[in-house]
Length: 586
Image 1: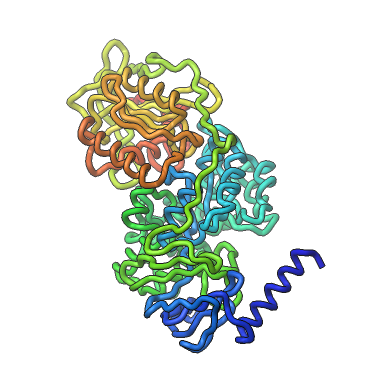
Image 2: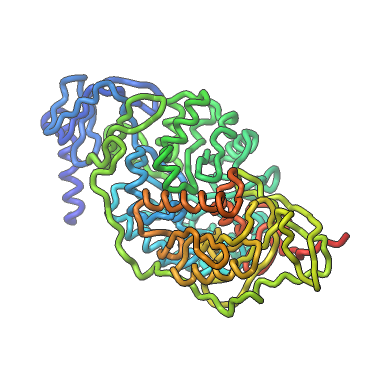
C-alpha cells in the first residue's frame, strides 16, 4: 500500500469513528437550520466535521467536537459554485479573485481561462493552476476550445486538438471550455470536431456557447456532447436546451444580466438542469452586490423558492461537472459550507472550505498575495503603428455602422450617411459616430482594423483598452486620430490596461501588467480605478451614463456575438460569419 493509500485509509477510519460517536469531531456546528438538497427540505441536527470532511449528524445539542460553534438559528448551506467564470474579467489576479469571492460564499469555481490563453497559450492555463494552488477558493478549469475564437482574427496563441490533449487529463481540468465556434460545430468542421473528441476521449464535459441557435442547428450542436449553455436570453431558449439534455446557466455578470429574463423558464420539473454563473464580473460588482449569492438573492426576490435557488447554486453544478465530493451537506462530502443569517439577502456570516473557517462577516481571514509569474508578462508586440494606420478611405458616404445597444454586448447592424472629404471619413461633431480601431498586439503583424461605431456618446478624445474579447488586441475609440494614437502608445508603454486621453493627456488609467488583462492591485483599488475611469469618461468625454463604456468597448471585438464586430482584420458580420466591407451600395 502506498503512502497516499495508507493516509486515505486512516482518514476514512477516522471519519467512521467520528460518525459513530466513538471519537469527537474536529468541528461540531450546532443550532443551525441545515439544507438537505436531495430531499429539498430543512432539518435540525449537529453537524460533525473531521479532516475537512462531513462525517455525519448528531442529535441537536448532543454533538461532540474539539470546537463547537453555535450557529444560533442561522441557515447552513453547501458552499456556492460558480459554474462558469473568466477570472481574468475581474481584472484581478487569481489570488485576489479568491479573496474577493470567498466571503460571498463562493467556495468553488469552474473557470475558463480563454482570455489569458488567447494571449499566452497553455502557459496561461498553467499560470492559473499554479496561482490557485494555495487559495481558499477551490478552482477548477476548462481547457479553452476557441483560441482564437474564430479564424478571422489574430490572437497570441492557437490551440488545436493536440494542444488541448496536453492538458485535458489534468485532475483539476474538468473538460473543454465554451465552444463559441458554433458555425464550425454545425458545419462539422474537422478542426472543431477534433477538439470535441479530445474531451470525449477522456469522458469530460464540453461547455457550450450558442446564442440564438434553434431547431435543427441546436440539435446538431447538442448531438456532439456539448452539455451547457450560458448564452440564453429567453425562457423559451432555456427550455429548448433542457429538452436536448443540456444544462442552462443563469448568468449575472457586470455587463450581461440574464437571471430575471430566464427565471420564467425555470420550473420545479426542470430546475435541476439549471445552474448559476457570473461569466464576467468586476470587483465593484462583487464588493457591492456579491457573487453567486447575488444570483440567488435576485432569484428569490423574484419569487423562486429559496431551496430551488440554493440547489441551482450548489448541487446542480456539482452534478453537472462531476464534482461528486461537494455541493451538498451529507456524510463523506467536503465540508465546504456557508452560514447565512436569512434567506433574503444571502450575506454570509461564516464560510468554511474543507472544514476550515476562511471568511467571516464579509472578510477573508487569510488573504493570499499574488506572485509574479514570467509566463504572463505583458505582450505588446505592435508593429509600425501611426496616425496613417487609422486612415479610413471611403468612396461612398453610405456605410455600415456598429450600433451600441446599452445593457448588453449584442450590437446592432446599423447604416448611416457620413461625411467624406477628399476620399476619407471625417468626424462630424454633431453626429454620435466615431472611429473604432483594433490593433494586433501579439505577433507584430501590423494589422489594424478600422470601422465606425455609434452610441458611445464620446466627444473630445479617445478611450483605449488592451482588454478586447477574446483575442485581446488593443481596441481604441475616439473622435480624433491624434488622441487615439496617443492612447495606444500609452497602453504599450505601461504593458496594457485601460486609459482615457484628451488633447494628448492621460486623464485616467488602470495598468494591467498581467497579460494586459489583469492588475496586480487589490480588488478595492481596481474597483476605485474603474470608477474613476467611468466618472472621467462621463464628465470629460460625455460618454452616456447608461453605458459601461470599457466593458462595452471590450466586446466590440468579439466576432461570435451578433451583429457587427471589429477584428484586427476588418469589420465582421457575425450573422453570416464573414467579413463585410464598410461601404454599402445604395
